[in-house]
Length: 355
Image 1 (cartoon, rainbow, N blue to C red):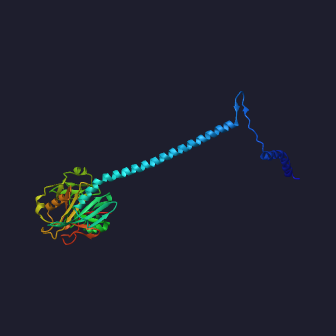
Image 2: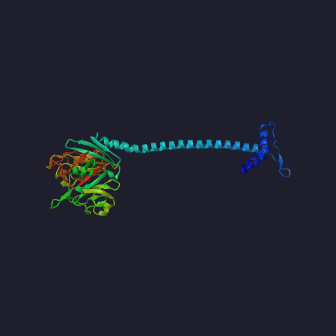
Image 3: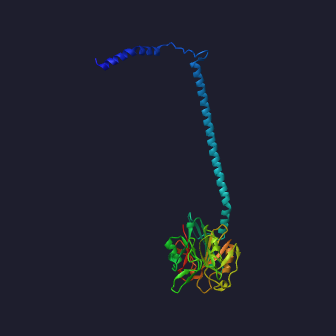
């Protein structure tokens, strides 16, 4: 017999009495009472009593836990309900706050009629309308700028002294629409420069030029709001935070009222193709481009007629941009107006619109 077998044998002999007792207890029918022990002096300790007390506490704790869970669930349900109600109230309030603006926009749009073309994106909303007046025909481009990316003022071929048609600029930049901007002056070498003060991306391209011979600055500030008028110093213009703009003549409306038209602009020419930049009180822009069949002054619109039309449309401020053969309106790659030169004129500056 090996040593391991001997150890096992001793172990079995030692455990046999205990195994027998365990088997007897399992099958015995008699119950073993649990007695109460004295713990010094008169104090006693009962296993039954303590177990019962502990059980009662556990039952109570379970009931309280269930109640707490129920209360927490009720609070969460109330919170979710309140959040939904508040969200609904905020949405309703936002809708109510926007309602006057929507009503106003529908009213000014109704005065223009039904749009012949339109385009919309996160940057801009464009609506193109026709104007059929007794003495002239034209087009109105209503512009709602939603971001700085919706509009740019650009130089012809992006270079001082260069020029290109508005259609070429639109195609080169991939713009959805374009309108001619300010006046220009040619030098002896045939280079075409923007007239007087011109601002692109907040920078003065060729310095500041005080208003002279009724010239006015026309553009947008850094909040995309229309600014314009006569400025004697750069400091005066800087107060308006100009982002972009060009120069021409004259102001047509200020705060909804007609302004005096310089005499030479009443008759030289009396009628012509025109380009107008204007705004509504909600800061949406309106560009009007009228047709003129030649440069003789016998076709197109007078500035006085356009003042009347602008007031009828509910315009706040309006400024005259370069006109005649310069007047150009491009939409979705097409020339909308009839250029009075019989073809598009290369220009120094253009307003472009982007989706």
